[in-house]
Image (cartoon, rainbow, N blue to C red; front, side, top):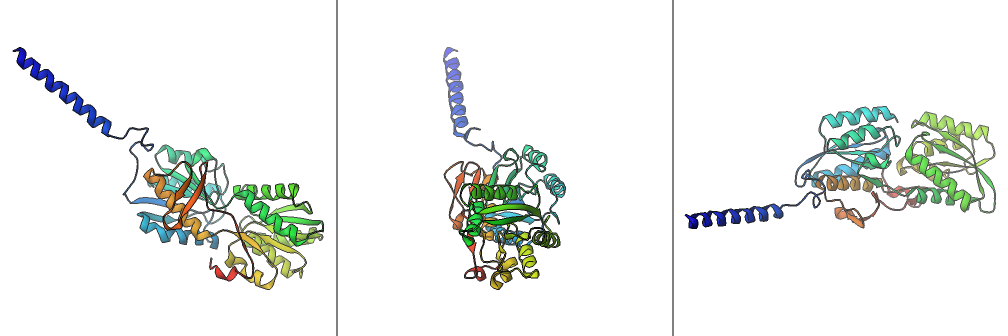
Length: 343
């Protein structure tokens, strides 16, 4: 009887040891930050939402994203509001939450209005990334940053300052909306660069295009009438820059008022060739869209690194700064290179 008891005890101990070994062979929650929610090797649903559809800048980003989506096993959807309207974005985000999307990739109209909806998405296990335009960090996982605000602001101030070297000139800014997070940061960086380095520039007014070409043209025309001493218009938007150039040409001030800013080449190419816009800045928009999809795939898979660099397939490696994946420095376009780009 004692021999049988001893055998039973030995078997029980052996089972416990084996169970313990099997348990330790599984990754713990600390080793797998997604706690078993990784989508690795699965097809995922990703919506890429611009600030507004119908804009060639966002269309170029979508084209880049779509090019790589199939290879990343992504069911890709590009959709957004028809105007710069945060409430429309919120409504659409809520719809995609209800449809159980895996990743929301958002270019935000403003940094705060979308926060509650995006937090709700995260609470339901949906990954949230921003691209082109950010929200408050607690409402998303990562931001695909097209360029630093300092790089854009200082470059635009430098171009204008060097154009009028040795002269003190008045500057007007034409932007999109008062709440656009990118515009707030870029204009803040322009002002800082002027204060610290390019002191021959004096900002006299800031006006808004509200994402509409007709509004932009009217605002730029009003600037030229109300501020006849303005020698520079800086418009860091794809709506504002061609609007400013058109207003300058219509008032016969081409060559007298220096127009620069940020836009995709297709919308300002004619003004570059006419000489009204000598230089402007942007980044590779298609690459921005592609990078956003690589990040979307990585956050869904739970493979996003927390520091160093991020390898995005054939695109190469991109620096990670905090929770920002950096596309790189802005590129300066002029008549010598503008025709090389078709977006």
